[in-house]
Structure formats: structure tokens, C-alpha cells
Image (tube, rainbow, N blue to C red):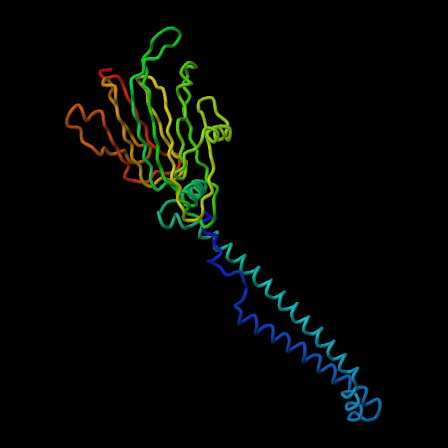
Length: 335
């Protein structure tokens, strides 16, 4: 929360205004020059008294060229001293003001959430909200996930087993909400089937970034860019995005699932609007979808006959926070 409240525009970087700094400089310079004049005059009077005539010595003193050289040197030293003093005072005042501003920010950070929500929220929770949401430089302005579910008969160890083959396509748009260019990561994690004989069927088939289709070489580079885990095949590409600009992304991939299973979809970025559409080409499955956040997915199309059971669409009315998403589930009918 303290980081959120830090702003270069909230508190001035200088201790004084330009007018006040100029006035202080001239005051110090006047004092320095005045002191020089008084010291010079006193010196003239002292030596003039010793020589018997103050007026004659003063005239001789002011008419001497060496005198003016000494005066100019003294004036230069006086100006330099005045400048150093002014800078020292300015720096001290700025340091005091910055310390006062930091203390004020700390007080605000401690009380703002309690005052607004009437809740004593733990600081670690506030910091997490700030970093993952309020300071998030990249957001998904829209996200559309489309799944086609087919019946797959796959031979495993000499036996024919039935599975669900999913052809998935995700389209979304990223926006740079910050004030600086960002090298945006575009990634995908594909779940790896537990059965080694099925792993080759879970694969990435197409990538399109900024309306340009990536080549097989570029897809392979994205595969090597981030290590896989024991349960996920991971890909990542990066794209430079200027402040305020958007980036369109399309990812197509295939999955192999059991006939009683689910598919969980989540996002690393805050997402403003989301839809999920499903086409079921196997007629003996019941399917459903739920949102993994505080509000459930809402069906867009009402089911009036059996043909419409094959085409289902849901939408999420509220934004998704990072690591939120939805789950698509299916079960054999009658189980």
C-alpha cells in the first residue's frame, strides 16, 4: 500500500518555490557583500588614521588598480559562499520535506483501508491486492475460449479406450495500461496426460500474435523459452507493447481427457470480459461450467431442445482477477 501512495506529483521535489529560493539567495548575497564593504571601509579608516589622513588614503585606495582586482576577487568569493549556503539550505529543507512526506504517506497507508472499508485489513493482504491488481501494467480487455469436444477411441497397450478429444481455441486482447513500454509475456500451459501413450496428442497447433501466424521454428523457440513441469507443457513468447497499445493473441491446441473429467482455465492477467463456448460432438455427455471467482458463469443461450445441448455459451459479467478463471466439466450421461 505504501508503494501505491508514492507519487512524484503528490509532493514537490524542491524544498522551496522558485520565488522563495531567489529571495533567499539575494538576501545571503546582500549580507556577504555588505560584510565585505564594511570590512573594506574599516580597513581604509584604520590605515588612514595611521597615515594621518583618512580622506587622502581613501582617494589613493580607490584610484589604485590593484585595489579593484582585490575587490573583484572578494566579490567572487562572496558570491561563491552565498551560492554554497543557498544550496545547503535548499538541500536541508528538501530533505526535511521528503521525510515529512514519507511519514505522511505511512500514516495514510496504515489508515486508508480501515477508514474506507471500516475493516482492519492485514497489510500483507493489502500489498498483494496492490501488486497483483492495482499496479498490474497489463490487462486482458477481452477473452474468448472455444472448445470442441469429440469422442476419441484410442488404442493403449493393445486395448481400445474411449476418451474425449478437445480442440481448444483461445482469443484475447492485451492492453498496456502503464506509462512505459513493456516486453509482454504471451504464454500457454497445456496439461500433460498421466498416460504416456496419450501425451503426444496434447499439443499446440497454432499461435497468432499481433495478427501474425508464428512459424514452426518460432513455436519451437517458445517451447524452449520456459521449462516444462511434470504436469504441464509450457510455452512463452514476448512482444514489445507501447503505453496504451493493444496486442491480439490467438492460441489453438488439442487435449486428451477422460470421459469423466474437467478442464480448468485461468489467466495471469486481470481480465475485463470473458466468454466460454462449447460444441459437444459426443451425445452421451452431460457438461457444465462454473466460474472460479465470486460470481458464477451465466449461460447466454437457453436450451430448448436436444440439438441445442451441443452448443453452449457462458459469459462472466464481472472482471477476473489474476489466477482466476473457470472450469468446464463433463460426465457420462446417467452416471
